[in-house]
Length: 70
Image 1 (cartoon, rainbow, N blue to C red):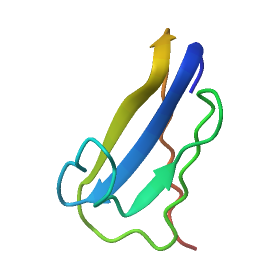
Image 2: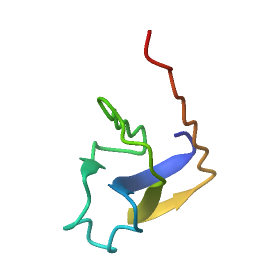
Image 3: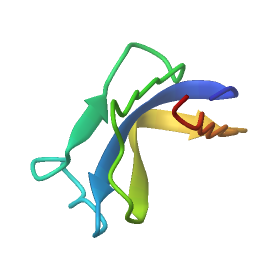
């Protein structure tokens, strides 16, 4: 992601994940804010991402990449 501080990232297919991430399909809670989620064989739906501050943070950026199957 980038910036400073510490965040957690939650991803859910079809709906926004709850704030604590307990219903997320995929999670990333690494130290700092360099989070990574990989979705193997993604379904044809909308994926929602929630970023939650674990501690104070600022200047975040996000990159999402989709690679079509061969």
